Length: 415
Image (cartoon, rainbow, N blue to C red; front, top):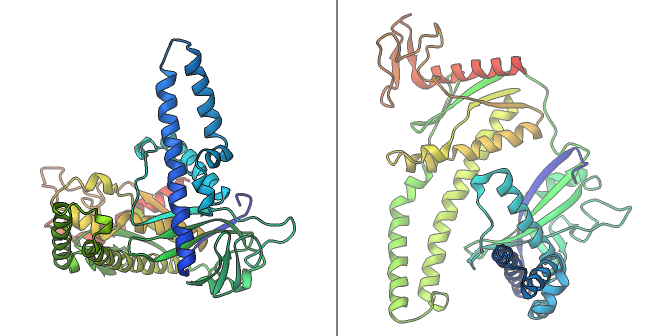
């Protein structure tokens, strides 16, 4: 997959039968179990290697654990119930790879944390590789393939109905290679399939270059203001159902407390599970609406402009402000920047982020910076202001967007 020029991710909803659902659930549990085995083995190895005395029983145990860690067949031999549930070796191998990737990510980005035990949840996933013969590749070939544009064959599951945007790939079916696929169950009991696709042919038809550049200023008052003066209002999806969600969560908490008093596990408490599904559905609705909105905004910006500049925002740091944390989490800035980044590559556009320092405080016309020469800095309540040096009246966000664009053009010129 890495030698292919273009890459694309495809997510579809799948509709498994009752038998297939049981198989998916077994694979999800087996994948989590194998991952946790790797965590437990490494924890024990860490403790044993701290023993300085060369005791033979300790050395034998270290040798055995290292063998067990790198041998899938040993896991099936020690836990024969895995084979009895129809779990394949590919699922266990992919769980091991995910564990190794988690360690690599920790070494590269220390903020990600070390791999830890995965507890059982209502949602879960497992991965499968796609195997091909030497000559035939494409969406209609391989161990995971399309039978037609509404049905797929998935390794270990068989034929299954799918729904999504896969029909946009009809013309490229014979040139696309399918990589790793992920079968996922969400907290409301719906099932999805994600596919990694690669090709030497572009996945989308790019339009002609229009040589337009635009800078965007992200804020909580208005979701986005661009350097042309256009404003996109903030939809505030979470706030729109905040009261309804809080009421549903209080009800969920009461049902959990009742089940605890009656010494019933929550998994067997039917009223609790019904309410849990209702809360999860409300949260899913907000997430889907926000993601749909962000896709619409990001695609429009990338398709209509050759060069897009945005400010680099550290949402993790901004969330420490308790007065703005809810608004910042609701708006989804980091998700938007991620979408702009990969869609710029997809549509052959350019997208850069710049340091937002003083973009709000600087006059775009004369370059005067508020907070200098005895002036006060602008606060969040100052939505418009007049430059004390040149006397030009500014709309705060529009002025910032123009400054962001200028910084982006300077960055492009130096590169």
